Image (tube, rainbow, N blue to C red; front, side):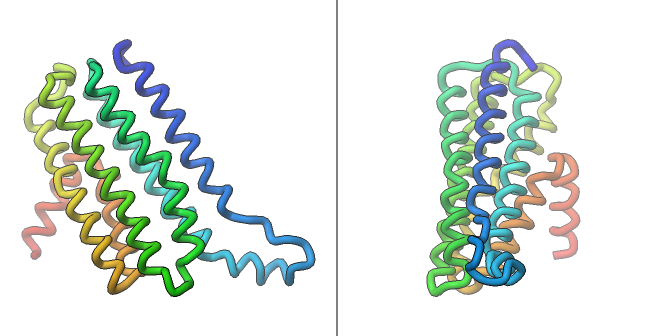
Length: 206
């Protein structure tokens, strides 16, 4: 961790940790006397689904943030601002998670899923801005070569569009939109070199 980015990374890690911890607060303890405990726990399955999805997403975003800052060695005011914008998106995740958990079984499930997926569209945009700003302003270390830069750029480039497709898909199928969203998260968890190979194989078979 370079001295220029040490405080950025430490602050960012704290934000990720708080955001991921807040997710569990949406899973309520059934009140005594409100019914059989097993039944009451089972009825909360939308909260469990939303918790697992968002925990995985925040964890993967933290992995990607860590990967970026293994290459980002210098910082300026612009980088600080764009990193804060990204963290703003991260801190907002518990809200759409709660909305999804509350409405997943109801008439507003489609809108809840659209709001949920829309949050990741914004975060994907912020990830792209942060990375491309660091790239264009030469804030990266000397150890990363052009090929590695291109791999990271390509992996992130499609994120906003793909997550936006999840928003549209939610109108037709909430389950399908959340499934695709989860698959996308798993894809972004892959190291850029492996993600590029997966994309090439998918294109070859497509």
